[in-house]
Length: 464
Ligand code: UD1
Ligand code: CA
Image (cartoon, rainbow, N blue to C red; front, side, top):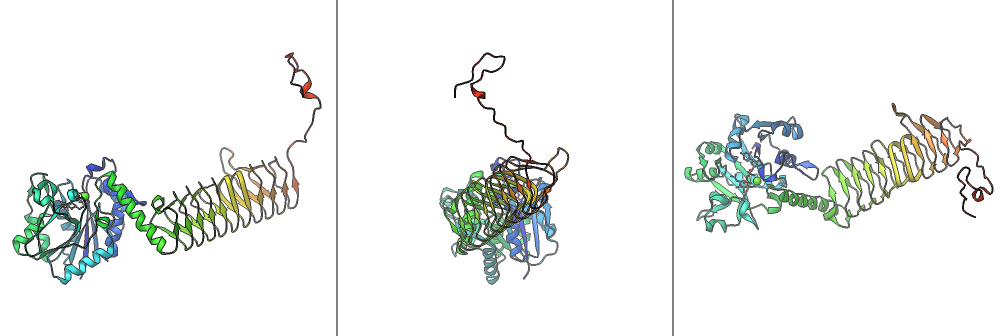
């Protein structure tokens, strides 16, 4: 049996108080709508249709893909009207239509699959997933008939006091088979809200004697709708817990999982340890037995095994190879690579810099557009002067080079293997292999200078 998914995403999202369409608000680095689209894909939907409103262009730009159809709902006239708008895009589709809410980002494909199995097993025309809510006022209440079937879904605004006590609520996920879609034509506008409620198809199905059922297979943690910023924060926390649980089960230690932010495109090897307040964003791959200390943010980077990333470091679009050590307070800007067993320490900034195996830049440096060989020692305060105001130039240091502290390399410049740079040098010319380069002036000591009067002022210097 084939399945099509329609995702309702055209609501105004007024309660978010935002200029950004509600379904584009992000949870763990992905717009809410994207999570729902991926769930739809994973139930092997033949067709995925997104109903979007006046923000359709920005929504398409953000989550558009070749396999997703977008349909415009010009005015947000309610969930029933939204599904009507999708009907044309479904064309002569004959299978089961699954309706999902774009603002329920925690929905999992396994649950939808299970729901579809029940829907088909029981040969229903219409099915809906329900769940028990601790605070049901934001959801439609499931009204059961005497035999346990569902006779209506009533929103808070329209509910009688006794109905408000019902805790079983509508998840917003429906399955429609056969001509259940034609129930939409019977929906009348809800006077209280001026909208066409999709939930009214349940009553219409009952009127026509079509088989409808609500399966209470959901949990609030999976089906919560996001209507406010507070709910967005709650959904983010639930998603974060889901992700950290997955990695814990695969052998990763978290010292405080609730304080860690890990995107879906991240993978972490076993025996790695993640300290509090760590952010792993975009596509990040971390090897085995790596330790990430507190307040580290890693964006689109590959980190090897046995690596230590010390406190308060930022790594963007870079590579850190096995057994290397980075930080504390290091910044790896895009295009950098820290070689196997290499060390990048306190207040060191790299930009498009490749640091060879076992090399060290331990303190206070800026290394930009640099290629640094193996076993190189970069002294404290070394700076590559890579920019001449117009263009960027490269600094190339051969294997085994020793750079004394407070050196500047005025690029383009090359230093041959095993050469030494005396501390405090400004290197403007290439240095041959094995040479010692010194560019500072020789020291001069003026004896007794401090005891002499300062010329022209009559003042005395202090006695030493
Ligand atoms: C809806 C359901 C409620 C259910 C809850 C689950 C109705 C009338 N109510 O309530 O029973 O418990 O979801 O979370 O259906 N949308 C459109 N076009 C519109 C209006 C909404 O596409 O004109 C989309 C929204 O973008 C959203 C979804 O439909 O993704 C649900 O709309 P929303 O206004 O959030 O409905 P709720 O009040 O949460
Ligand atoms: Ca909602």
